[in-house]
Image (cartoon, rainbow, N blue to C red):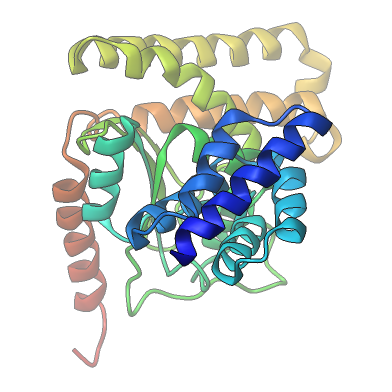
Length: 302
């Protein structure tokens, strides 16, 4: 009965809101689900509210003031706090289940530490870029996100503030850091080793649209190779058209830095060629096992 009364209150509030201003239909549908008798429905509605992104903030803030239901108010506040942050699945099984349900591909980050404690400069940079609101919102809307912690116990910590900043494409001391773009079934369609800025990741998301729309993996690989060649050609053209800029040190020339960035992206495509078509879970388990074995062998106390 309490849930029914809460639902009735929300519906009446929504009708009043409709008279004042246009209200997004999906938002109102999710509000109703927050009053559902089923805990799982309420939980999913909270997550889906987060998925609406920053555009839902004003509506959520108004509903927080309107509702008198303590749980609904709490869930709205939770959603407001989490909007604009990457929404990570809790593991590979959960990611695959979400991907199948939502019919979305998987964006898998292989990192050298958990979300809150990266173990390298590259890991710190990757986490910082992925936390940017605009990119996080786009990733949440298009992918199921998964953070894969592949830290190596004996790897060195290179987070020395005196050392020069990490460069795009840096995969950390163990070489484990990378971004895997997978189908909803966990098959890799694209891979970029190392960390990348939000600009480079956004550009890649646009390039990957036809890769994921390809009817099969073979066609997807061909499209991906064409994209790599296109990036290489763009870098070569820019370098050829700007010889004076290319003669300057990178620190003094935005043009040269852009050429170098594009070349790193193209090199990243080629470095990922042998991963495309693999099932990501099996590939990562084998790769991480190999990396850990190599590091353990170099330790004198083992």
